[in-house]
Image 1 (cartoon, rainbow, N blue to C red):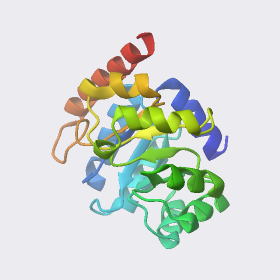
Image 2 (cartoon, rainbow, N blue to C red; image 1 turned 180 degrees about the vertical axis):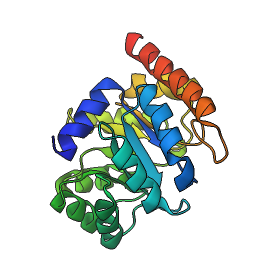
Image 3 (cartoon, one colour; image 1 turned 135 degrees about the vertical axis):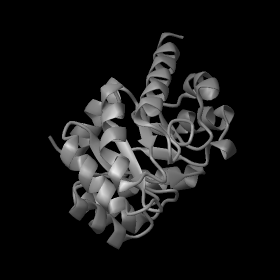
Length: 212
């Protein structure tokens, strides 16, 4: 199964990406296991975390059924570093065509950050797997609805930044396909049991948005 197929399979099960900013390598196994046990299959370790490549390598090895990768990826060398560590998911806060193309060359799933329709269409032309709408605080549900009206219907729109259980419904109704969840799910120092409970709460909240 290639990265796109793995992404699609995990996305179908639960379209939520765990953003583990600040994760330490020694806690990666227990936090990752807690997420997978809660039904999460998409895990991102931002590169401005402590020793992120070590955490990515550990997660990729221990969680073969999950798609693990990096966030805050800003250049092509970082794409190659993540690939070498075993990561197969690239997430960026911005759209850089070279980053997207390098990720695709290495057969990695790639979610560049976009804020405007121009960036969104350019990212799709470069080969993006889906679009990270970032920061979501600047892209309210009304803006998501407007983007959904003009983008190809099969484009995955993924608001990230400031997403919590309380605002998922509004974004989902506007056309969001899933979310990246950061500090509402994980903060440095949290125990695996705390993360697992939050992960289960988010999964339950997503199930409610599906039923709505």
